[in-house]
Image 1 (spheres, rainbow, N blue to C red):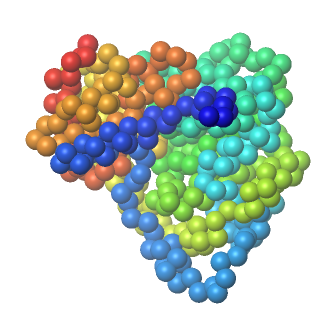
Image 2 (cartoon, rainbow, N blue to C red):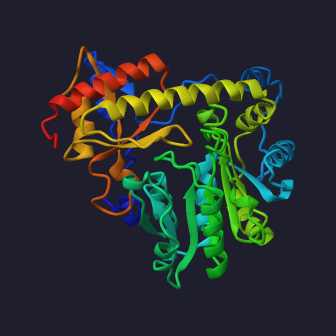
Image 3 (cartoon, helix red, strand yellow):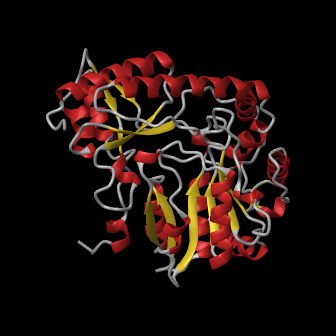
Length: 398
Protein backbone atom coordinates (compact mmCIF):
# COMPACT_ATOMS: atom_id res chain seq x y z
CA UNK A 1 0.00 0.00 0.00
CA UNK A 2 1.38 3.48 -0.85
CA UNK A 3 2.39 5.55 2.17
CA UNK A 4 -0.20 8.04 3.43
CA UNK A 5 0.60 11.70 3.96
CA UNK A 6 1.92 12.90 7.30
CA UNK A 7 -0.62 15.73 7.15
CA UNK A 8 -3.48 13.24 6.99
CA UNK A 9 -2.05 11.23 9.86
CA UNK A 10 -1.59 14.37 11.94
CA UNK A 11 -5.15 15.59 11.38
CA UNK A 12 -7.04 15.31 14.68
CA UNK A 13 -10.39 13.55 14.82
CA UNK A 14 -13.33 15.78 15.64
CA UNK A 15 -14.31 15.53 19.33
CA UNK A 16 -17.79 16.53 18.20
CA UNK A 17 -18.24 13.91 15.47
CA UNK A 18 -15.86 11.05 16.26
CA UNK A 19 -18.39 9.32 18.52
CA UNK A 20 -21.16 9.29 15.89
CA UNK A 21 -20.72 5.55 15.11
CA UNK A 22 -21.30 4.74 18.79
CA UNK A 23 -24.39 6.96 18.85
CA UNK A 24 -25.73 5.26 15.72
CA UNK A 25 -25.13 1.84 17.27
CA UNK A 26 -27.00 2.89 20.42
CA UNK A 27 -29.95 4.04 18.32
CA UNK A 28 -29.96 0.71 16.48
CA UNK A 29 -30.28 -0.98 19.90
CA UNK A 30 -33.40 1.11 20.53
CA UNK A 31 -31.76 3.67 22.83
CA UNK A 32 -32.92 7.28 22.55
CA UNK A 33 -29.86 9.53 22.31
CA UNK A 34 -30.08 13.16 23.40
CA UNK A 35 -27.53 15.11 21.36
CA UNK A 36 -25.80 17.64 23.60
CA UNK A 37 -22.59 17.21 21.61
CA UNK A 38 -23.14 19.40 18.56
CA UNK A 39 -24.20 22.97 17.87
CA UNK A 40 -27.07 22.03 15.56
CA UNK A 41 -30.00 24.19 16.66
CA UNK A 42 -33.56 22.90 16.42
CA UNK A 43 -34.65 26.51 15.82
CA UNK A 44 -36.61 26.93 12.58
CA UNK A 45 -34.79 28.54 9.66
CA UNK A 46 -36.32 31.94 8.73
CA UNK A 47 -39.23 31.54 6.32
CA UNK A 48 -37.78 34.09 3.90
CA UNK A 49 -34.67 31.98 3.41
CA UNK A 50 -36.73 28.84 2.84
CA UNK A 51 -38.94 30.68 0.34
CA UNK A 52 -35.87 31.84 -1.58
CA UNK A 53 -34.85 28.22 -2.06
CA UNK A 54 -38.38 27.04 -2.88
CA UNK A 55 -38.86 29.74 -5.50
CA UNK A 56 -35.59 29.40 -7.40
CA UNK A 57 -36.43 29.69 -11.10
CA UNK A 58 -33.01 30.08 -12.71
CA UNK A 59 -32.70 27.74 -15.73
CA UNK A 60 -28.96 27.19 -15.13
CA UNK A 61 -27.23 26.73 -11.78
CA UNK A 62 -24.10 28.65 -12.72
CA UNK A 63 -20.86 29.59 -11.02
CA UNK A 64 -20.96 32.80 -9.02
CA UNK A 65 -18.15 35.32 -8.70
CA UNK A 66 -15.29 33.88 -6.61
CA UNK A 67 -15.97 36.57 -4.01
CA UNK A 68 -19.67 35.70 -3.98
CA UNK A 69 -22.74 37.46 -5.37
CA UNK A 70 -22.24 41.24 -5.33
CA UNK A 71 -25.84 41.74 -4.20
CA UNK A 72 -25.21 39.51 -1.18
CA UNK A 73 -21.98 41.30 -0.29
CA UNK A 74 -23.82 44.62 -0.57
CA UNK A 75 -26.44 43.21 1.78
CA UNK A 76 -23.74 42.17 4.22
CA UNK A 77 -22.31 45.71 4.15
CA UNK A 78 -25.71 47.00 5.35
CA UNK A 79 -25.91 44.25 7.96
CA UNK A 80 -22.51 45.18 9.44
CA UNK A 81 -23.31 48.88 9.19
CA UNK A 82 -26.25 48.24 11.50
CA UNK A 83 -23.72 46.91 14.02
CA UNK A 84 -21.37 49.87 13.82
CA UNK A 85 -18.94 48.30 11.33
CA UNK A 86 -18.26 50.29 8.15
CA UNK A 87 -17.20 48.16 5.18
CA UNK A 88 -17.40 47.99 1.40
CA UNK A 89 -18.28 44.92 -0.72
CA UNK A 90 -14.59 44.72 -1.68
CA UNK A 91 -13.76 43.94 1.96
CA UNK A 92 -15.81 40.73 1.88
CA UNK A 93 -15.18 37.31 0.34
CA UNK A 94 -18.09 34.89 0.67
CA UNK A 95 -16.84 31.45 1.69
CA UNK A 96 -17.98 27.85 1.94
CA UNK A 97 -18.95 28.17 5.57
CA UNK A 98 -16.99 29.97 8.25
CA UNK A 99 -14.52 27.08 8.12
CA UNK A 100 -13.19 28.07 4.71
CA UNK A 101 -12.77 31.67 5.88
CA UNK A 102 -10.49 30.47 8.69
CA UNK A 103 -8.48 28.24 6.36
CA UNK A 104 -8.12 31.15 3.91
CA UNK A 105 -6.81 33.36 6.71
CA UNK A 106 -4.22 30.83 7.85
CA UNK A 107 -3.08 30.25 4.26
CA UNK A 108 -3.11 33.93 3.39
CA UNK A 109 -1.37 35.27 6.50
CA UNK A 110 0.99 32.55 7.71
CA UNK A 111 3.70 30.40 6.12
CA UNK A 112 4.27 26.75 7.10
CA UNK A 113 5.96 26.70 10.49
CA UNK A 114 4.58 30.10 11.53
CA UNK A 115 2.63 30.38 14.79
CA UNK A 116 -0.86 31.48 15.77
CA UNK A 117 -1.68 32.13 19.44
CA UNK A 118 -5.11 30.95 20.57
CA UNK A 119 -6.63 31.03 24.07
CA UNK A 120 -7.84 27.53 24.93
CA UNK A 121 -10.22 25.79 25.06
CA UNK A 122 -11.12 26.75 21.50
CA UNK A 123 -13.24 25.50 18.62
CA UNK A 124 -11.79 22.06 17.95
CA UNK A 125 -11.45 22.45 14.19
CA UNK A 126 -8.87 25.24 14.62
CA UNK A 127 -6.43 22.42 15.32
CA UNK A 128 -7.36 20.68 12.07
CA UNK A 129 -7.24 23.88 10.01
CA UNK A 130 -3.78 24.63 11.38
CA UNK A 131 -2.55 21.16 10.42
CA UNK A 132 -3.87 21.66 6.88
CA UNK A 133 -2.00 24.97 6.61
CA UNK A 134 1.19 23.66 8.25
CA UNK A 135 0.77 26.24 11.00
CA UNK A 136 1.69 25.75 14.66
CA UNK A 137 -0.99 26.50 17.27
CA UNK A 138 0.46 28.09 20.40
CA UNK A 139 -2.21 27.72 23.11
CA UNK A 140 -2.71 29.92 26.15
CA UNK A 141 -4.78 28.04 28.75
CA UNK A 142 -7.78 29.75 30.29
CA UNK A 143 -9.41 28.15 33.30
CA UNK A 144 -12.87 27.13 34.42
CA UNK A 145 -11.78 28.44 37.83
CA UNK A 146 -12.38 32.00 36.57
CA UNK A 147 -15.03 31.03 34.01
CA UNK A 148 -12.53 31.04 31.11
CA UNK A 149 -11.72 34.76 31.18
CA UNK A 150 -9.08 36.08 28.76
CA UNK A 151 -5.56 35.24 29.99
CA UNK A 152 -3.36 38.15 31.07
CA UNK A 153 -1.50 40.22 28.47
CA UNK A 154 1.77 38.91 29.91
CA UNK A 155 0.76 35.37 28.97
CA UNK A 156 0.43 36.43 25.34
CA UNK A 157 3.68 38.38 25.31
CA UNK A 158 5.77 35.57 26.77
CA UNK A 159 4.64 33.28 23.91
CA UNK A 160 5.41 35.67 21.07
CA UNK A 161 8.41 34.58 18.96
CA UNK A 162 9.83 35.69 15.59
CA UNK A 163 7.47 33.13 13.98
CA UNK A 164 4.32 34.48 15.63
CA UNK A 165 2.06 35.97 12.97
CA UNK A 166 -1.42 36.05 14.46
CA UNK A 167 -3.76 35.84 17.45
CA UNK A 168 -7.06 34.03 16.93
CA UNK A 169 -10.11 34.26 19.20
CA UNK A 170 -13.73 33.13 19.06
CA UNK A 171 -16.14 35.71 20.49
CA UNK A 172 -18.55 34.69 21.94
CA UNK A 173 -16.52 31.59 22.54
CA UNK A 174 -17.19 28.10 21.32
CA UNK A 175 -16.92 25.91 23.44
CA UNK A 176 -17.15 27.95 26.67
CA UNK A 177 -19.78 30.58 25.94
CA UNK A 178 -17.42 33.25 27.30
CA UNK A 179 -18.01 36.74 25.89
CA UNK A 180 -14.90 38.90 25.61
CA UNK A 181 -15.48 42.46 26.79
CA UNK A 182 -14.56 45.60 24.86
CA UNK A 183 -11.65 46.08 27.26
CA UNK A 184 -10.34 42.56 26.55
CA UNK A 185 -10.63 43.06 22.78
CA UNK A 186 -8.77 46.38 23.08
CA UNK A 187 -6.00 44.63 25.03
CA UNK A 188 -5.62 42.13 22.21
CA UNK A 189 -5.63 44.96 19.69
CA UNK A 190 -2.80 46.67 21.56
CA UNK A 191 -0.74 43.44 21.46
CA UNK A 192 -1.42 43.02 17.73
CA UNK A 193 -0.30 46.58 17.05
CA UNK A 194 2.78 46.40 19.29
CA UNK A 195 4.08 43.21 17.69
CA UNK A 196 2.63 43.77 14.19
CA UNK A 197 0.37 40.71 14.26
CA UNK A 198 -2.91 39.83 12.60
CA UNK A 199 -5.86 39.73 15.00
CA UNK A 200 -8.40 37.17 13.76
CA UNK A 201 -11.85 36.89 15.30
CA UNK A 202 -14.44 34.18 14.75
CA UNK A 203 -17.66 36.08 15.51
CA UNK A 204 -20.30 33.68 14.23
CA UNK A 205 -22.23 33.81 17.54
CA UNK A 206 -22.39 37.63 17.62
CA UNK A 207 -26.21 37.63 17.83
CA UNK A 208 -26.19 35.50 20.98
CA UNK A 209 -24.96 37.72 23.83
CA UNK A 210 -26.94 37.56 27.06
CA UNK A 211 -27.62 39.54 30.20
CA UNK A 212 -27.58 42.90 28.47
CA UNK A 213 -23.96 42.40 27.36
CA UNK A 214 -22.94 44.05 24.07
CA UNK A 215 -20.76 42.36 21.50
CA UNK A 216 -17.64 44.34 20.56
CA UNK A 217 -16.08 43.35 17.24
CA UNK A 218 -12.40 43.48 16.37
CA UNK A 219 -13.55 45.45 13.33
CA UNK A 220 -14.49 48.30 15.68
CA UNK A 221 -10.87 48.76 16.82
CA UNK A 222 -9.45 52.06 15.59
CA UNK A 223 -6.05 52.17 13.89
CA UNK A 224 -5.96 48.41 13.31
CA UNK A 225 -7.62 48.25 9.91
CA UNK A 226 -4.62 46.43 8.39
CA UNK A 227 -4.43 43.93 11.25
CA UNK A 228 -8.00 42.75 11.89
CA UNK A 229 -9.81 39.87 10.19
CA UNK A 230 -13.39 38.80 10.83
CA UNK A 231 -14.80 35.31 10.23
CA UNK A 232 -18.55 35.01 9.92
CA UNK A 233 -21.23 32.49 9.05
CA UNK A 234 -24.99 32.20 8.62
CA UNK A 235 -25.07 28.72 10.16
CA UNK A 236 -26.03 29.61 13.72
CA UNK A 237 -27.42 33.14 13.23
CA UNK A 238 -30.25 31.89 11.02
CA UNK A 239 -30.15 28.19 11.95
CA UNK A 240 -28.93 27.35 8.44
CA UNK A 241 -25.93 25.11 9.15
CA UNK A 242 -26.40 23.09 5.96
CA UNK A 243 -26.21 25.94 3.44
CA UNK A 244 -22.45 26.32 4.13
CA UNK A 245 -22.12 30.07 3.65
CA UNK A 246 -19.61 32.15 5.57
CA UNK A 247 -17.51 35.26 5.05
CA UNK A 248 -13.90 36.40 5.21
CA UNK A 249 -13.84 40.10 6.09
CA UNK A 250 -10.88 42.49 6.18
CA UNK A 251 -10.13 46.10 5.25
CA UNK A 252 -6.57 45.06 4.33
CA UNK A 253 -6.67 45.32 0.53
CA UNK A 254 -3.41 43.40 0.02
CA UNK A 255 -4.68 40.56 2.20
CA UNK A 256 -7.98 40.44 0.31
CA UNK A 257 -6.01 40.26 -2.94
CA UNK A 258 -3.90 37.43 -1.53
CA UNK A 259 -6.87 35.46 -0.23
CA UNK A 260 -8.79 35.99 -3.47
CA UNK A 261 -6.30 33.66 -5.20
CA UNK A 262 -7.35 30.86 -2.85
CA UNK A 263 -10.99 31.77 -3.47
CA UNK A 264 -10.48 31.60 -7.23
CA UNK A 265 -8.75 28.23 -6.91
CA UNK A 266 -11.86 26.73 -5.35
CA UNK A 267 -13.99 28.55 -7.97
CA UNK A 268 -16.92 29.92 -5.95
CA UNK A 269 -19.15 29.62 -2.88
CA UNK A 270 -22.48 27.75 -3.23
CA UNK A 271 -25.08 29.58 -5.32
CA UNK A 272 -28.20 28.21 -3.59
CA UNK A 273 -26.66 28.84 -0.19
CA UNK A 274 -25.96 32.46 -1.10
CA UNK A 275 -29.53 32.93 -2.30
CA UNK A 276 -30.83 31.67 1.03
CA UNK A 277 -28.29 33.74 2.98
CA UNK A 278 -29.16 36.92 1.08
CA UNK A 279 -32.86 36.39 1.72
CA UNK A 280 -32.12 35.77 5.40
CA UNK A 281 -30.71 39.30 5.71
CA UNK A 282 -34.32 40.51 5.66
CA UNK A 283 -35.30 38.38 8.66
CA UNK A 284 -37.44 40.52 10.99
CA UNK A 285 -36.25 41.50 14.45
CA UNK A 286 -39.12 39.49 15.99
CA UNK A 287 -37.40 36.29 14.85
CA UNK A 288 -34.20 37.16 16.70
CA UNK A 289 -36.09 38.29 19.80
CA UNK A 290 -37.84 34.93 19.98
CA UNK A 291 -34.63 32.98 19.39
CA UNK A 292 -32.72 35.11 21.91
CA UNK A 293 -35.30 34.53 24.65
CA UNK A 294 -35.44 30.82 23.88
CA UNK A 295 -31.67 30.43 24.24
CA UNK A 296 -31.62 32.33 27.52
CA UNK A 297 -34.34 30.01 28.87
CA UNK A 298 -32.42 26.94 27.70
CA UNK A 299 -29.15 28.23 29.13
CA UNK A 300 -30.73 28.85 32.50
CA UNK A 301 -32.28 25.38 32.58
CA UNK A 302 -28.98 23.72 31.69
CA UNK A 303 -26.73 25.70 34.04
CA UNK A 304 -29.10 25.38 36.99
CA UNK A 305 -29.55 21.64 36.47
CA UNK A 306 -25.81 21.03 36.06
CA UNK A 307 -24.84 22.94 39.18
CA UNK A 308 -27.40 20.99 41.23
CA UNK A 309 -25.65 17.71 40.39
CA UNK A 310 -23.14 16.67 43.04
CA UNK A 311 -19.56 17.30 41.93
CA UNK A 312 -20.49 19.25 38.77
CA UNK A 313 -19.69 22.88 37.98
CA UNK A 314 -20.73 24.96 35.00
CA UNK A 315 -20.10 28.69 34.53
CA UNK A 316 -23.05 30.75 33.30
CA UNK A 317 -22.25 31.51 29.63
CA UNK A 318 -22.73 35.07 28.44
CA UNK A 319 -22.87 34.12 24.77
CA UNK A 320 -23.24 31.43 22.10
CA UNK A 321 -25.16 28.28 23.15
CA UNK A 322 -22.55 26.09 24.82
CA UNK A 323 -21.03 25.55 28.20
CA UNK A 324 -18.00 23.62 29.34
CA UNK A 325 -18.84 21.75 32.52
CA UNK A 326 -16.47 20.12 34.99
CA UNK A 327 -17.63 16.62 35.93
CA UNK A 328 -16.53 14.20 38.69
CA UNK A 329 -15.03 11.77 36.15
CA UNK A 330 -11.61 10.30 35.40
CA UNK A 331 -11.57 10.72 31.63
CA UNK A 332 -14.03 12.66 29.46
CA UNK A 333 -13.31 10.59 26.33
CA UNK A 334 -13.96 7.31 28.16
CA UNK A 335 -17.07 8.77 29.78
CA UNK A 336 -18.52 9.98 26.48
CA UNK A 337 -18.01 6.58 24.85
CA UNK A 338 -19.33 4.74 27.92
CA UNK A 339 -22.54 6.78 27.78
CA UNK A 340 -23.19 5.47 24.27
CA UNK A 341 -21.86 1.92 24.57
CA UNK A 342 -22.74 0.78 28.06
CA UNK A 343 -25.21 3.11 29.73
CA UNK A 344 -28.90 3.78 29.40
CA UNK A 345 -31.55 5.01 31.82
CA UNK A 346 -35.17 4.26 30.99
CA UNK A 347 -34.03 3.53 27.44
CA UNK A 348 -32.23 6.86 27.07
CA UNK A 349 -28.70 8.22 27.07
CA UNK A 350 -26.87 11.43 26.19
CA UNK A 351 -24.10 12.30 23.78
CA UNK A 352 -21.52 14.85 24.94
CA UNK A 353 -18.33 16.28 23.42
CA UNK A 354 -15.18 15.54 25.46
CA UNK A 355 -13.43 18.84 26.18
CA UNK A 356 -9.99 17.34 25.54
CA UNK A 357 -10.55 17.94 21.83
CA UNK A 358 -10.98 21.67 22.45
CA UNK A 359 -7.51 22.04 23.95
CA UNK A 360 -4.12 21.92 22.24
CA UNK A 361 -2.29 21.29 25.54
CA UNK A 362 -2.24 17.56 26.24
CA UNK A 363 -3.88 16.59 29.52
CA UNK A 364 -6.21 19.58 29.79
CA UNK A 365 -9.96 19.05 29.74
CA UNK A 366 -9.78 15.46 31.02
CA UNK A 367 -12.69 16.01 33.40
CA UNK A 368 -14.61 18.52 31.26
CA UNK A 369 -17.24 18.19 28.53
CA UNK A 370 -18.82 20.66 26.16
CA UNK A 371 -22.61 20.69 26.22
CA UNK A 372 -24.80 22.49 23.67
CA UNK A 373 -28.19 23.79 24.79
CA UNK A 374 -29.76 23.45 21.37
CA UNK A 375 -32.61 21.11 22.33
CA UNK A 376 -36.09 22.24 23.32
CA UNK A 377 -36.51 22.75 27.05
CA UNK A 378 -38.41 19.54 27.78
CA UNK A 379 -35.80 17.43 25.98
CA UNK A 380 -33.04 19.40 27.67
CA UNK A 381 -34.48 18.73 31.13
CA UNK A 382 -34.77 15.03 30.38
CA UNK A 383 -31.25 14.86 28.93
CA UNK A 384 -29.82 16.44 32.07
CA UNK A 385 -31.80 14.05 34.27
CA UNK A 386 -30.30 11.15 32.32
CA UNK A 387 -26.81 12.68 32.65
CA UNK A 388 -27.27 12.94 36.42
CA UNK A 389 -28.22 9.27 36.61
CA UNK A 390 -25.21 8.34 34.48
CA UNK A 391 -22.82 10.15 36.81
CA UNK A 392 -24.20 8.16 39.75
CA UNK A 393 -23.13 4.86 38.25
CA UNK A 394 -20.16 5.70 36.01
CA UNK A 395 -17.28 3.34 37.02
CA UNK A 396 -14.68 6.07 36.67
CA UNK A 397 -16.41 8.59 38.90
CA UNK A 398 -13.95 10.61 40.98
